[in-house]
Image 1 (spheres, rainbow, N blue to C red):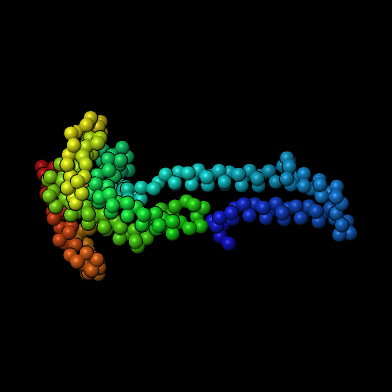
Image 2: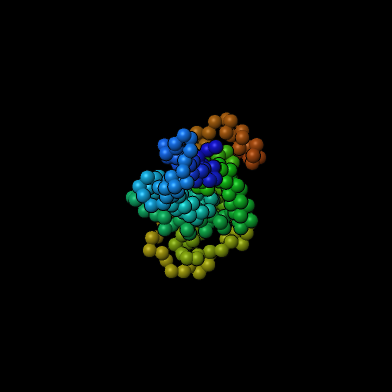
Length: 267
């Protein structure tokens, strides 16, 4: 049985204690017999205070405490869609010079929920939870995030998210302006469904302004995997089979607009 199976650590500790107890009894046996007093003394030595197994008990307790903390933290990481998206631009987030910080993520996730729509968002979240549970089975209840990101269905979900964003941003300038409002206000917009958005009256602007430069950095990282020149025929064929349209027709317009924006910002 794997050490990651439920109860495995406790069983391992109990096994060591039982073997130690049996060994101590054997040492005190006379003619194959152990007196009741010897058994009681051994029980006190193994189960009570003293330094005989203190290191073992302390180590087991530390392991349980560490696992509890990991489970507690992991249980809060349930925004699977946000994690899938953030994974694509983690290197930008880690670069202080980018000006993009984790304080931007909450507003970005809110915008993403509006882009996908409530029903689709909840459905994808449910599928992601199932994937996370599947890849993390036998890991002490802690999600195996790298296995989750590599899972074939997660990759398809990421593609679905990117397709939704690309289609939403066909009216590029209007959608970019909308996203900048969302990213700089709290709250700044609401969804009418079907890809229609209304900008609410801007609230208090955030201190960490989100501008076109930051927008470009995130979107270029988001769609780096959609480089049309890097796609092989197999990838194109699979995409066409799933969506009944070519990757060029879905991602081409957005990638062209991002290229034009990069030129404008560099001028």
